[in-house]
Structure formats: structure tokens, C-alpha cells
Length: 71
Image 1 (cartoon, rainbow, N blue to C red):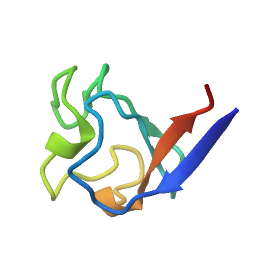
Image 2: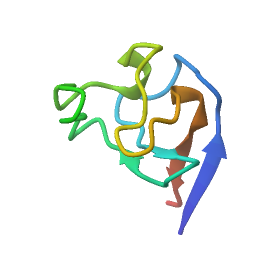
Image 3: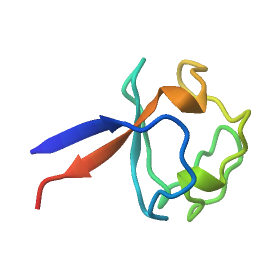
């Protein structure tokens, strides 16, 4: 089961943390990057510029929530 946690904009996320848009539910996966914004694969969410927006719905970074996978 997966849980979502609203974290606001934090810089202390793990480099591999996957984030989900709270508006359109698209997932930012650092392993894939963001082809739309020409963000290279391997780029952590915390390293995205503050003006980065959701490639699907244009929501700001602050609308993304941490995906916590149950172990």
C-alpha cells in the first residue's frame, strides 16, 4: 500500500523520493526526470528549480506530495 504525505517544499528529501502532484496525480520520479522540462534522469525533486511546474497541469512544486511506500 502507498501513502502520500504533503511535505510542502523541502530540501531534505532522499534523492530517490518519488513525488505525486496533488492536483492531477502525475508522479515525478527522479529516475525518469521530466522530459517536458528537459530535466535529466537522476535529478532529485529537491534539485528542481523553485519555478519548476507540473508538466501535466502546471501546478507549483508545493502541490507535490511524497509517496511513501509501505515496507
